[in-house]
Length: 125
Image (cartoon, rainbow, N blue to C red; front, side, top):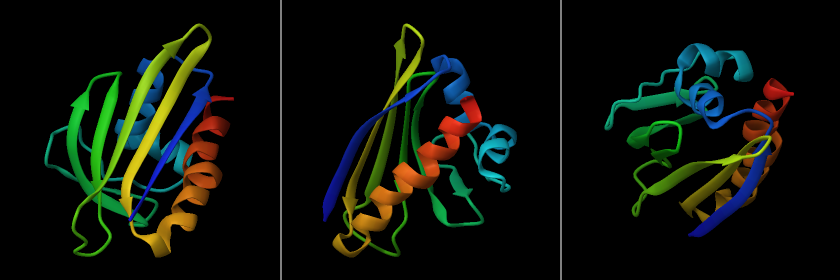
């Protein structure tokens, strides 16, 4: 298992970034796909036509999102923690993705950079 941690910068306040990550209507605007998302702990979510599925574990409004991303019946769970830090001109987004299966690590790292965060960056630019 491998872990991924990286910081990204988005030119929007944490409130807008949080909404973009948690509101299904906003998610569709930056992904182009329908999304299933709710800010209720233990609710299931789905992004990019089920390319990313899992369970929402914890929310701290405008500050933090913690999710379990499914890789089959993998144990220990693959956990994604997204922390939003206010910056003078926007938001520093801290992404930590733990327990990524070794064979999926490169795809996950590329996905964070080239799809997930790149789409958010384009949305806010």
